[in-house]
Amino acid sequence: EETELELEDVELEWPADGPHAGDLVAGRYEVRTVLAAGDTGHIYRVFDHKAGREYALKLLHPEIVAYKGARQRFFTEMAVSRRLMHNNITRVLDVGDEGDRVFYIMELPSGQSLDTLLRRRAAQGRRLTLIEAVHILHPLCNALDYLHQTMVHGHLRPDNVFICSDTTAKLMDV
View 1: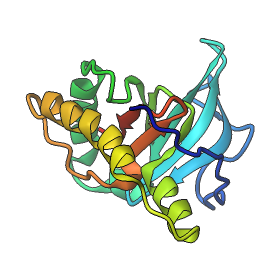
View 2: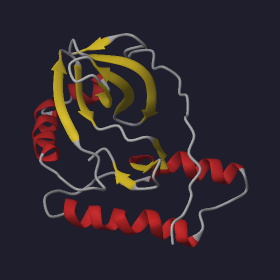
View 3: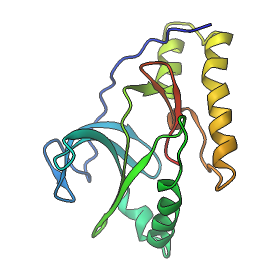
């Protein structure tokens, strides 16, 4: 049985030390909005002037990149992530390094994070129905099964699960 999940855009504050609307990253990714903020960095909606479409850009916090070996570990992990091909895992398309700015580009599905959906439901005094939860969790289990053949997703949590506008669940930040 299909389920309808309510999806809305969310506006977040701009980080003081990050790029802002209109800034270019790597000379081609124009920053549009902040999509998410986490322990390791911020995710932005960007427009790729080369490809002519929007993507998500995750920019790691400089203090994360400053740890010894962190930069090399990041590029090694991203090389593995770029090879992942699964319908329920957000694709990593590009990786870059601009001094203290280390980032990756991933596909940008329309929708919202599971965290946002759960918070909105809680504010309304509602929870996901059992059917909605299964509709989200079943494909995520398939994605994790696929992913764990190569690597372990070390930070699975609701803000790393994206609910697309067609209600497909996608694992992010792999």
